Image (cartoon, rainbow, N blue to C red; front, side, top):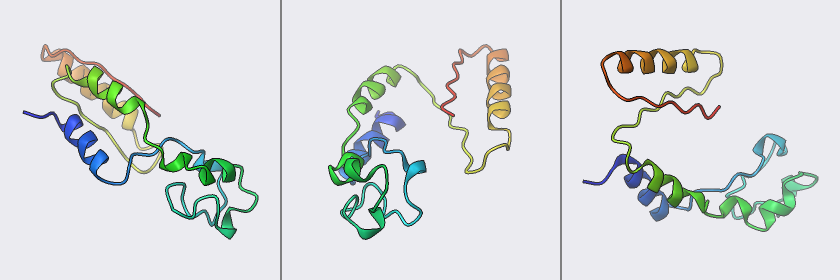
Length: 115
């Protein structure tokens, strides 16, 4: 049976490719997006620090680490994601408490905070 992560990665490869990071926080307000065909070429890209990287296709490049990550996580039976689109709502606290509760039940727990 295929793992959810492997399913997500394979579906990611069927859709437009997963993008490598371009510093979107430094992008112009009217940015067309680093994965857009017009990235780095649109008039709204003028003066953006990412313009050269976007024009070269860095935002459309497939992240080479995806396969390595999938291989390393293949032995992890269950993965939980605690997610919110807003900061300061207690994601880390909730994650830690969930980890403690699962460990108290005798389960092996590992946490990764990518914030």
